[in-house]
Length: 414
Image 1 (cartoon, helix red, strand yellow):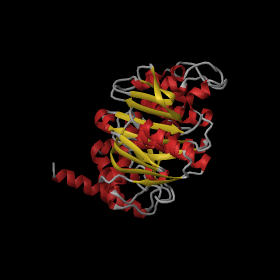
Image 2 (tube, one colour):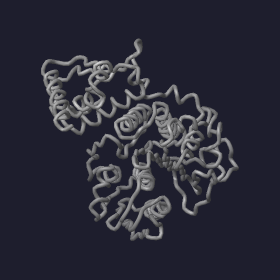
Image 3 (cartoon, rainbow, N blue to C red):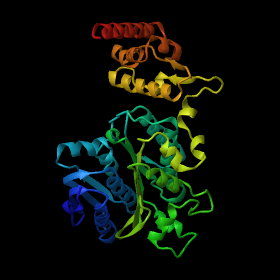
Image 4 (cartoon, rainbow, N blue to C red):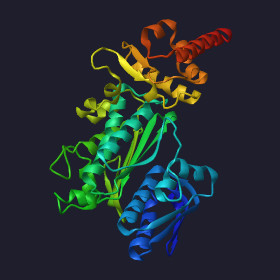
């Protein structure tokens, strides 16, 4: 991850990127794009990553947001050449970077892991809401051990950063977002990028004489906003949360950048638009929630809004919506993970597990979901906490058989 191993060269509209694309080096790619499309006027630009060795979501989304802007404003056509190295080559496709760069050549990623979100574009409040829900769901389905309050805090930070794009960026292409997880370090990372006017220009609509670096420093202060609307708590709260444990925070916009230390740095190459990289450390329970200091966090509680019954002290878990697929062991495992997390968050609430609309499930799904859940929590707690609803006779037979076989297997193998 040493920027010194990075190299960019441009011949006409052909831009070659070699080495490690990291936060310390991506602005050089932006400069090459600017020279090719806006200075020299090339409308066919080739992004050649053949010799790239590493690439990370933050730098890639900044590059892709710039490509989207140039495509929209100058009708530039981009051709992406993926890295020669096999693992990185697959990442370009799986993370949806290839599609976002050259949608006519590369299909949208069909990679659907339960615990991350490949890069997605959003340009409306409805798309924003859908993606925030998917990100929360990915965290709930993963091995990340977040408390209910910390999950609410995480979802709030994602929403606030994404919402800044829609409210302040003045960007017709919208923004890009990607979620990554690092369970061994107990960290979640999300990246948001856009090709809009950027934080300095937005801040100068009300404070015309500030520098780019001053604009970034002000953007993470409590109560500061670029418009008369809103309270200006979004980036402040997000920065506060990122300072918990080994978290990390970084903004690149205009001729400046700012990190976790809240001290802005001047940059020689501008970012047209904004890149925000946030890594949150959830190793200390409820530390994220305490750090944000914003009452709106609790009102945006994803778990409460999605699962709590409106009348009774019970959770509603609709399998058709939660599982995605009822035909694989992998899906059964992620579905069980959700249930186990909900039980930990609500130890005194029973859960209505609703199979309505499902006519068949695979034995492997039933075993991984309910068979293993039965033996992990015990028969008494299972019968008290899990209420199976809307189960047709065929599904009931598969579930009963899966639980029986799992109990026998555990008994035989100690």
